[in-house]
Image 1 (cartoon, one colour):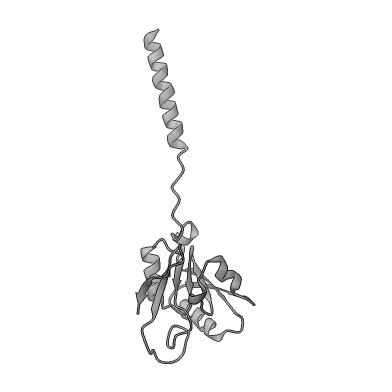
Image 2 (cartoon, helix red, strand yellow):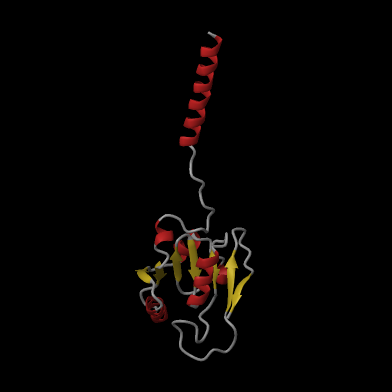
Length: 163
């Protein structure tokens, strides 16, 4: 009888271990890490812009030429999008691009976006305020470096890259 009891205990605990292993959830990615469809299609972006903004349309064309699948959404007021993604007022620009769980605020060169996607930092997004001359979608000559900020989850915004 003692041997049967030992076998039953072994089977019982083996069953518990098997159930625990099968019910283990996959770890979730931290915010700022593209998941699901965003991983398989990192080239799909949504640009939120005003319907009357020509430079934003030029930026959408720039992104298409760089190989991105671009969906453009015209809005009468961009405030809800900027609030949704927590874009600090001082870093806001004329349009907001969303890719995966990141935002890209302003006329940011594709090289900075590619850096964001390859490094996958644990941030909300990147931003370059205003409409700098000669930035993608903007006319004119480049007069200074493009300084692109990372927007951290605590709303600090250190330099992400300078181009």
